[in-house]
Image (cartoon, rainbow, N blue to C red; front, side, top):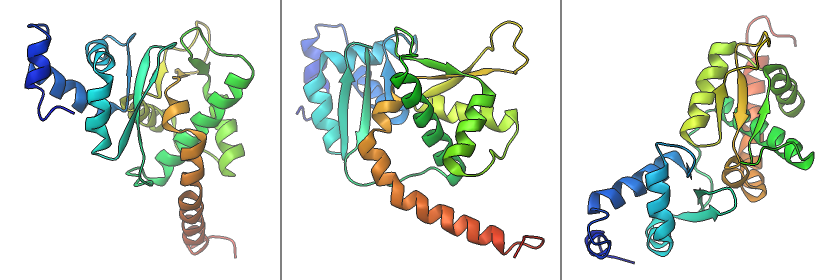
Length: 212
């Protein structure tokens, strides 16, 4: 692994500068997934892809693993050492619901050539209720805010609803969600999520007006 990015920049013969490597590293860690087809991520993706070993070794020092899906042209990082989630309960349940929806659509062969799938708000709400055993608490503004968070992590975003659709928007789920929230990651989420749900439900039961 290089001690810094200067030598690698020099070997690029003027194509890249050290700051380009630093920016690509930062963008990958912060956004978690980089797609060649995304205009604001393409440069960083190409740089990381061309120097996979160096970036992989640098990321391993942070407890992260670098992975690639060459067919769908994206890369991603996942945490290797336990789960230290910075997400609140609503964000966690939201992402797990998207992961379940994506899995179901993938099994049904309902993915675009880029590996995406698209769902409407009623399908999301039905899936959320089935998975979480509770209604989704929030209006379209809440859902938009959660999708902005998901977009920053490269797993989903809000898109325009089809013409004539009364819904304010639809949801596009990207293939990175299957890597960031892999089956292994989901199993590690399980115990923590279950404990948080129990605590939340217990607190609700003690609220004034709650049924005994």
